[in-house]
Length: 189
Ligand SMILES: [Zn+2]
Image (cartoon, rainbow, N blue to C red):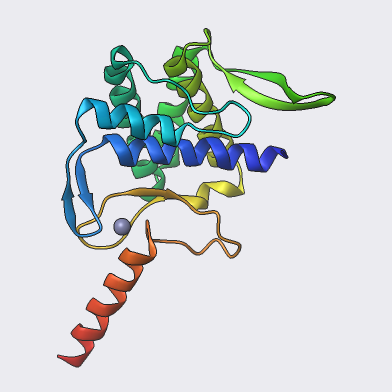
């Protein structure tokens, strides 16, 4: 795994947490955060990695994950608004609070790769540190333009653009088609 792909992986996990846990609007419909049992499943899906597998999310962790998702949402919104200094402030605070630090881990004999850990290895602190550091590396590089909030009407889902031409502005092809269709109808009127 190269460094960029790790930045994309943790930033994508950050977007996944935000979209799963923050109420708002999704693809033209109201989005309510799911019930607790469902939240635990979704978080485990979002945090799945081939190297570490699928984590077990305890009910006791849910409040902390919801708080983390709300903080991470701010970062996506601030980057979308072009306010990188606000975004940097939030990310710096999160890295400080979680004691974020790099560490070389080996998941296969003889292969080492850089990961981000927190001050302890609990699921929430570890992922908060990882998401914060991933977004920090994105904001501090050409990747900043790849982090955003869907521009479609009645949608506030966030995304990390992993496309080759870095031209993504929507959370999904559904929102892109919806917006195109609305523009087409507006032109016909
Ligand atoms: Zn959308």
